[in-house]
Structures are given as C-alpha cells and as structure tokens.
Length: 251
Image 1 (tube, rainbow, N blue to C red):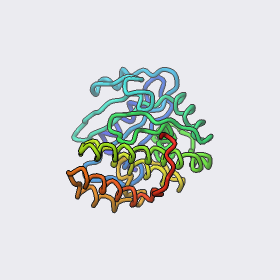
Image 2: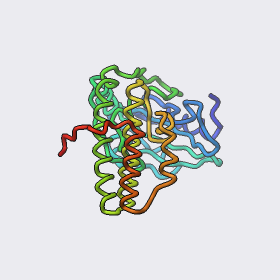
Image 3: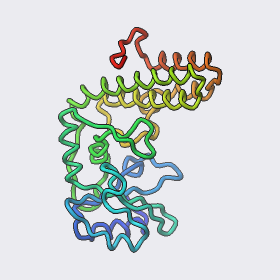
Image 4: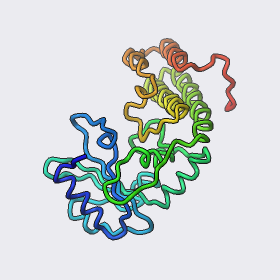
C-alpha cells in the first residue's frame, strides 16, 4: 500500500529510532476496510527499551506503560491533515501473551474504549492482521486451543452479564440494564468469532462480524418500565441463544 507522504515520513522516523525492531501498518488500513474518517495506525515493535526522542518532535508521546499492559503507550498525531496513531508494542509482552493464547489461556483487561474488556490475545490478533513496513513480525495463525477454550469462557461472562441486566431491570435501572445487556452481546460475539478461529483486534463492528447485527433493532427500541425491561432482557437472551434452563454456577 502506498502511504501518504506525511504518514510515510512518520513511519520512516519510527523505523530509524534506536530500539525499533519493526514498524507495521495496522487497523482498517491494513485490512483494506477503511471508512472516510479512518486514521492511520502505525505499530512500533521493540524489545526492552526504545528511544522516543525523534517521535516526540511530532507531538506528545505517552511512554511505555502509560496506557496499560496491553495498549502500552504511543501518540496521537496529526501531520498535513493526516491523523496518525502510533502504538508502542513491547515484543516481550507480545511474546508472553501470544504463547498463552497458543495454550488457550487469556485474561480480560478493563480498558478505556472497551465495553466487554480487552482480551490479552488482542496482541496476537494485531500480529495476524498487520502489514509490515520495516522489519518483520511473526505470523500468528489462530490457535486451536484458543478456539476450543475461549468460547465457553466468553459465554460464562455473557450469562453473568445477562443475570446482572435482569437484576438492574427489577430495580428499574435502565442505564444498568442497557449496559450489562450490551456487554453480554459483545461477549457472545467474542465467543462466536473465537469458534470460527477469527481474530478481532477490538469491538468495532464486532456484533456485525459475529452475525448479531439483528440485535441492533432491539437496542433501538429500549423500554423504560421495570416489567418491560425484564421482558426486553429475556428477548436479548433468546436472540443470543442462551438456554432457558442454563445452570448458574455463580449462584
């Protein structure tokens, strides 16, 4: 892919920084699914330490660790009307979570911008979907163990969230009901794409990718009364295919 000159300039600067091992194009640009407002995601892979001095000349840089253990750090830049997100990725962390993903193990982080949480295997998903610009990154096929183990875990979370949605509904708490129900939908969506062996890097369009787009209509007709709220949650549950006699191990 031909990068706009402003984006190519920043990519070249990243590639020349001390500690850089690879620079990749990520996000919708890498998967050829951008929309009119899409920015440019540049991933910088390093191991150990990275000298960010050259990047700081383009704007505010958030150093490693400031965005948490998965997002790590980076910068939101604008150059000649192009918006460029620089994402720092420590290969030590990437390797650790990729190995665990291959064994079917993962954790879920509460991360800003994520409703159901960010699974640690998103670092593997990024590897699988990016396009190297400088250097090389490892190939990352979807691990069979993750495809087997992740769906039941996501569905446990889905059912737990629906149970809490009902609890909020009984109290007439519309905000709590809506939030927990939306979380449940995304958790079921994660289960579905994992069963398929399909990587996803975030929650954008996740419901559509999982074939759950029909639920958007139910959220567009959200009720307010407590009785209606309960019925609404039951409809969400039915649409998600939750067994009505499902055992609840948390009770």
